[in-house]
Length: 274
Image 1: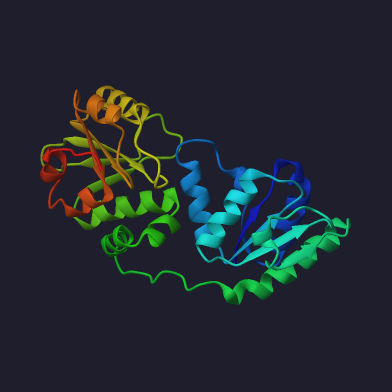
Image 2 (image 1 turned 120 degrees about the vertical axis):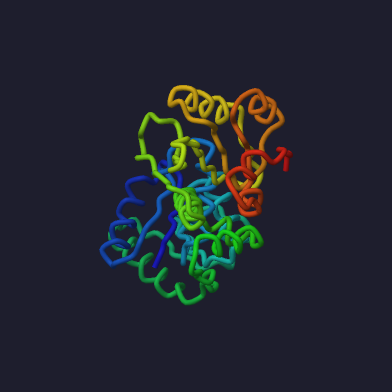
């Protein structure tokens, strides 16, 4: 079972105890404080919530982040379990949500939360059907916003990498933390030319920024690559398009990437803001 724990920073110690109880019981746990701040963070949190079997919310204050994450869980039809002290304020729309009242005994409360969460597992909506290829998965995700949102940034990057391999490209995945400045390298075995690829799984409201284009331009120049390609789940800002037009950088959405039949087509098609 996959469990997402929503909480404020003040409850770090209690949440650590809950997470340990879940893991000791064989469950996977996602705690949002582990996500590094950045343009991918909201997408990673959204994906973790949508792929969870249960969302546990520790409500000990009117924390906007916790209520935002509960909204995402409710919208995705993920079962929710609330835990709070007696008398803690809860919005009226949460009054009917399954609830565990804290007793002050941290270990006892944590064990009770795990038991109640396990009871809710069966209420989770069916998970997206698995597909045989990366292309089939990405084609389905491009048509189904819920499936696309359920993909974590690392999953999306892996699928894009696999898509290029399935299409016959030689793909080198860059080690995380590398100073290369890109996620993937596509190499043409005939002429040795390389294309640096930056993969971005963003939230629906986000757009590729100027900074992303600037970093990739620097990487292309530094590495002597023939071009840089940004593949994203959303469009780009006007400023990002303007900067990309002045250098060997191409901005593409997932739909653009799937529609292109060759690398030449992908790199040469006129860019349009989506």
